[in-house]
Amino acid sequence: MQGGTLNSAQQRVLSGMRPTGALHLGHYHGVLKNWIKLQHEYDCFFFVADWHALTTHYEDTRDLSGHVWEMVIDWLAAGVNPGSAKLFIQSRVPEHAELQLLLSMITPLGWLERVPTYKDQQEKLRERDLATFGFLGYPLLQSADILIYRAGLVPVGEDQVAHVEFTREIARRFNHIFGREPDFEAKAEAASKKMGKKNAKLYRELRKRYQEQGDHEALDVGRALLESQQNLTMGDRERLYGYLDGGSRSILPEPAALLTEAAKMPGLDGQKMSKSYNNAIGLRDEPEVVTQKLRTMPTDPARVRRTDPGDPAKCPVWQLHKVYSNEEVRSWVETGCTSAGIGCLECKQPIIDAVLKELEPIRERAREFAGNEKLVRNIISDGCEAARDVARDTLEDVRQAMGLAYR
Ligand code: TRP
Ligand code: SF4
Image 1 (tube, rainbow, N blue to C red):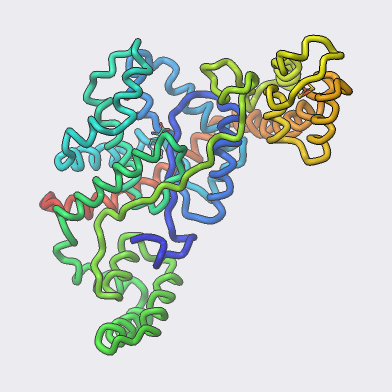
Image 2 (image 1 turned 90 degrees about the vertical axis):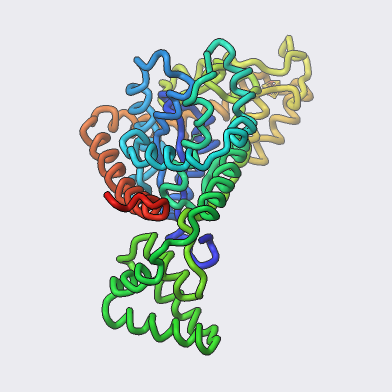
């Protein structure tokens, strides 16, 4: 079930990030700011995709755990709030793996081979042997990550949209093969009782009025009633929605991609900011390092001497002004650059100021979290527990649908 009947606070958002270690401004502007916004609007689940790292980097795992914790600290420092979103580590919710295994039974090999990243990444990472089962199955692991939480929305970049699309196809195939829950009615009845006697009675009446007399107002009131219930699991809530309007409940709802705009944050050389291009500003870089990086970054190559006019369109610094500067500063740059009225260091100063200002609170919070390992571990433990509760619930339904409920 999608947005139509769930209000946004009940709509679940899920996203994962590979543990790459300390993050940079590209992650902040591209992903984290978006997460921070979403965490106030939706029921958010954000996780460290550590198993995903193994699908490509299985040979040397010495840095893995360090990278996991560094990244979590940077999430927290940037403002991802464990009070609003569940933060956890994939491998600590082993239900993801069981769901991947069960889904693998119905996943045609051709579907996996045709996922665009399969061939692309093999070409790109030629130095690695990626002719592995784990690598081929990686999109299905991602499907399990998403479907285990019955997430409605998955914030991802352009490169990951195909994986969400793949997930939709897997969910559709699963629902087609295993259909609706065998004891849907009984489960819905049981779920209605969890609302308390009075509400359960009201729910039954509204359902009857809608289904027997076609009373649409009753349907609306019934949905509002379900929305206001705090104690229902996602599974029960969906059953009750389905039972109310006479539909059923798809066991694994199809998620939608929530496309994150292409990274607005260019690197120091004008290319996309990335650790491997060596053009990044780390979220925890010291102010002197940040200043030095920006002061030495390249400018329009045509401006050899201070007296040579330049063209902002050919200058990576201008890309940064587009992120950080207001109209007034930008027009100062345009005029000053094209007339050789300002020097490049002068031009960079407002950016240096803005980046330092932006990073100061992040660096400060990172320092606090880094010095309080116990707190960080507790936050993650709580997130893992909360995630597992949801994951277990879904897996229970999946096992049942697949005829495995005899344990
Ligand atoms: N595959 C994603 C990446 O490489 C990370 C990821 C893993 C993910 N599982 C996910 C993203 C589930 C969104 C939803 O960036
Ligand atoms: Fe680039 Fe600014 Fe120098 Fe022009 S003045 S080349 S925009 S750094």
